[in-house]
Amino acid sequence: MPTPADKILPKMFSTRDELMALVKDLDQAALIWRPSEGAWSIRDNLAHLVDAERAHRRFVEVVLEGRSIHLEGFDLDRWNQEHVTRRAEQSIDDILDALRVERQKTLAFLSTIPLDAWEQRDDHPALGGVSVRQVIKVIGVHERMHLKEIRKLLEMQEATKK
Image (cartoon, rainbow, N blue to C red; front, side, top):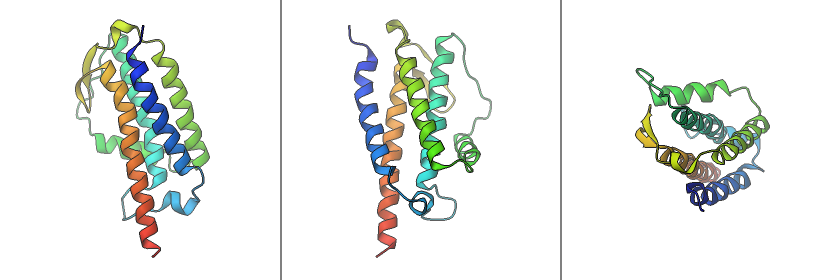
């Protein structure tokens, strides 16, 4: 019997393949280039994806354990920046390895979700009331969004060279 993961996984795999192919041969200058002060670089986007995937997976784990996450005064922008800043000293190889590890953990976890648990719901600190299925889908959708952002950054870099 097909599971919700069967629909979600192909898109997650294709997005990750596109992302890794796009960044694998970039030099350090391309990875850290910023269009303006305070804007994220390609490297920052990749670092963000590591922690975002982990956080989404952990949210689902907590929901499936029958617990809730209530973060009083949660500020998504602050959380994102703090996590990107924490990875500022990591090499790009370490960040790419962390992306691979988090994805492996997510894939292993997906195989453990009982079929009847995919519609279980709770309040996510940033997304509001969501089901397990929706949060798992967000992992891939979120990565596609940042893939587009990385492509845009590469186009912007190219335009500055002309």
